[in-house]
Amino acid sequence: MKRSIAAIIILALMLFTGCSSSHRIETAAVIENVSVARVSGQLIYTFYRLSSDEKPPKTEIAASSFEEACTLAREKYIPHLTLAKLRLLLVHRDLKDSVMPKDISYISTQTYFSPVAYVALCDDETIKKVGESSHILNTVEEQLKLCQKRSPQVRLDYLSIFNSLQRDDGNGVNIAFINSDKELKADIEKISVKYEN
Amino acid sequence: MQPNIKFSSKRLMLSLMLCSCSVILLQNHNVSPKNSFTVNLLCMLGGLAVSAVMFLPSVILKKTRDTDFLTVSAQSTPKLKIPLAAVYALYFVYAAEYFLLPYTDLFCKKYYPEVSPCVIGLCLLGACVYAAYKGANIISRFGLFLFAFALLTNLLMFGGSITSLDFANDSFALKADWDSALSTVIYFCAPSFIAVIYACLAGETKNFTLKQPLFALFFTALKYALVLFFVSFAVGAYAQRQDYQSFILSRVAHFDGFAGIESLFVALATMSVFMIISLFLSCINKSAQQGRLKNSILFAAIIFAVSFIAEWNNSVKEIFINDYIFIIFTAVVAVLIPLAYIFTGRKAK
Image (cartoon, rainbow over the protein chains, first blue to last red):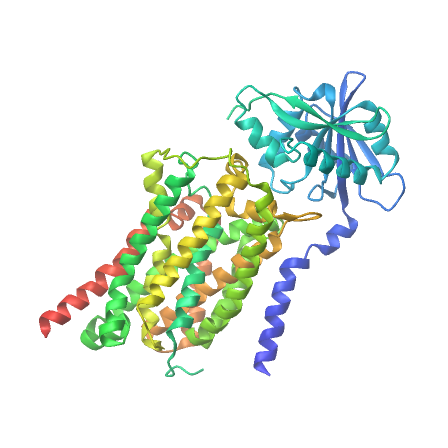
C-alpha cells in the first residue's frame, strides 16, 4: 500500500514538471514563423501565429530590432507570446547585412528559441506568399532541406549561422535565399558580418 | 527498512557513478572556452585522477577491514563521535547546497521561469527525506531505474546532435590559457564527493572489488568526454552565449521533425540531484546512528533554510557554489581525516 502511494506521488511529481504549463499553451499565442522587411522606410516584424486556418493570423510590429519587436509584442499586442515553437525567421534580402546578424545575435542569447530553427533570406513575393497560406511554411522548409542536400556548405539554422559568422574569416557565410520568381525555390546567398564579442 | 542487511557493492557504485556523471549536467561556464577541446579533455582527466586519489582511503578501509570510515572512527575514538558527525554533517549540508542551488537555478532559468526556486527545492527535499528514511539500499535500487533513464536520455542527446557536428567550431590543437585550465581542473575534481559517500556507506555493502570504483570513474570520464566533445563541436560558440551549456545540447538534439529533449534532460537532472541529496541525508543518518526520520527532516530543513538565504543573498550563493571550497572540504573529509585514522590505527597495532 505504502509503495503504491509512493509510486503515485513520484509519478505525479514527474508529470507535474512536464505538463504544468499545458494550460498556458492552449491560451498562448504560439508563433510559428516571423518575417522582417522594410516597408515605407520602417522595419516591420510580422509574427505569424499557429492556427488551423488557411491564412495564418498575423501581427505586424514596427521596431528597430527583433529584440524590440518581441518586447513590444509581449507588452502591447500578444500578451501570451510563445516563441519556443518558432520554426522559421525570414529576413528580406535587403536587410541581410544590417538586420540579420544583429537579430541572430539576440536570438543566441535567449533561452526559449530553438537553436535548430531555420533562418533564410527571401524576396518580397515570398513574404507575401507566407502571409497568404499556412502551407507555404512547409514548402519553404522542404526547399531548405533540398538546398542543403544540393549544397552541404549552406547554413540553415541559428546555431550554424551564428557559429559560422563568429569565425568568419572574410570569405562570407552561405545561407539560403528563398526566391519566388516562378515557384518557391531556395538558392544560396553569402553574408559576411563578424560579431563583436 | 532493513538496516543490517548488506546489499551489493556494485549497485552502490552504479548509483555513485550516476551521481558523479550528473555533475556535468549542471555545468555553467565552469569549462573555459579559452581552452581547446583537447586541453579541456586533459583537464577533465586530471580532475578525475584527483578524484581517484580521493577514493583511496575508503577503498583501503573497505578492502582491508571490510568496513567504512564512520564505523572505524566510532570504534577507535568513541569520544570524537559527536565532533566527527558534526564535521561530516556540515560537509553534507554544504555539498547538498553545491548541487541544489545550480539545479534550482537551471530549472527556473531554462525550463519553468515562473516558479520560485525555493518551491522546487522544497519539493525535491521532501522526496529526499523519504528516500533517506528508506536507506541507501532502496536509493541504490532507484539507481538501476535512473541508469536506464540516463542511458536513453544520453543516447537521444548525443544521437540527435550528430547532424549538428561542425569540426570548424573548435580544434584538437593544444590551445590553452593556464589560469582557466587550472579552474577547469578544479571543477572536474567535483566528482570526488562520491568518495565521501563511499567512505560513509561502504560498510553496508558486500562483494567489493577494486574494479568497481575504477569502472565508475572510467564511465564518468566517458560521459564527460562525450559532453565536452558535443558542446565543443556541435554547439560551439553558441554555448558561450547562454547559461548551462550541457542543457543546450538537449535543445540542439533533433531527429528530422522532432527537436529538443529538454524535458528528458531536466528529468535526468532532477533524479540525479534527488539521488545525490538522498545519499547525503543517508550518510548523515549513518554518522548520527539514530533517529533516521528525525535526522533527515532536521537536515533537510537546514538545507532548505540555507538555500532560501542563498537565493536572496548572492554572496552567500557564491560561497556555496565555489569549486575551490568544495574540493578542499572534500579532500579534508575524504582523505585527511580517514588517513589519520588509518595511520594511527597502524601505529597502535
